[in-house]
Length: 438
Image (cartoon, rainbow, N blue to C red; front, side, top):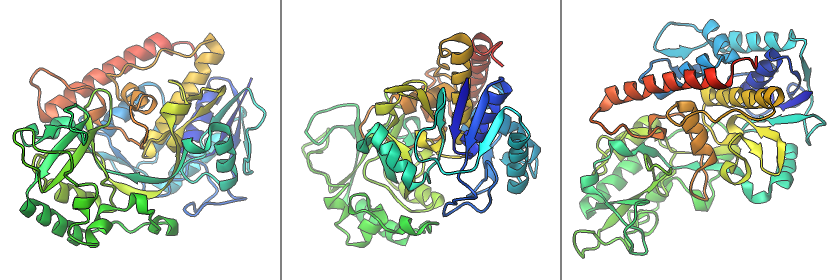
């Protein structure tokens, strides 16, 4: 049996090393150094291109929980990251040169892995294929993917509005209703007075914005303009755009608000809400400051920050199954940011999971049980594969993915409870499903 892994980034490197550890032959394709990207600087595997932080190690932080779970199910790259750490702080900060060099040495010294330095333009001949070519997938291969999975299922421009945790909102200042006049539990509305609205617009105009790395990120589509660009066009632009009050009369009176900020449930459990139409290039600090001016969002916790940038990813809920396989080609898996996950740790996580799925299929004949949704692993996987709306958007690890705890635990204690339960449940899942496959 042979597995072809396409792309030598974090997801592809993790996947290849885990497959080899299980005694499976791998062909790992990487187009660098023959063909580079706008952001890569070296030809090494698992190069960290944006920062050298793999985020928090603390158990009350969502990324700390995800890393704890990945350690339990034996992530190779997580071990390398810890060996490459430059401090013992609360975050896993690595020397990026040491990290990528160690990963490259592990791959090139492994007799089970054949590294092939060339651009992939179509699926190679293999028993299983893992597509992990990342957010900067080459144009040739992206066009091939479009042909395989359909034009409408591949996104090139990532316009993301902030996503907040439902449990951090003050519902007393909000009401459920859609623009057709029906009460529902999908759209949550925040009415603003003229004074509140104008103050919000002024703060948008004064906010510090992120400067894009890539030239194409400065070219905005009219359909996904950052809200600060819209606000700069005039004080009423947002009132006639995403903050228009039409159809959203107040639930407790017949009065029409001056403006309305609308939130939409992002998952089936309604533990996460996105701000409708509010993609933004504001810095993370400014997003927190400006959006917490909105009534009911004074204590908002952010699961995802808004952004507008180039990012190739697929509409997972429509084209992949629960195990990240193409529904029309069940020997083709996807991993990494093509899945619609954000961040270094999530990329490694995707490669780790896919390798486990393939190993289990090869050794047991069927994939394993899905990880429980009480874990960060299971909850993130469930979100990606069962996103309930048409406009699938990328997501990273956050506590809002895991169902609320309903017995009076608040704040940090609530996160710690979820974390401890997640660690226990992933360990039990591992014992039941992964023993004997490595």
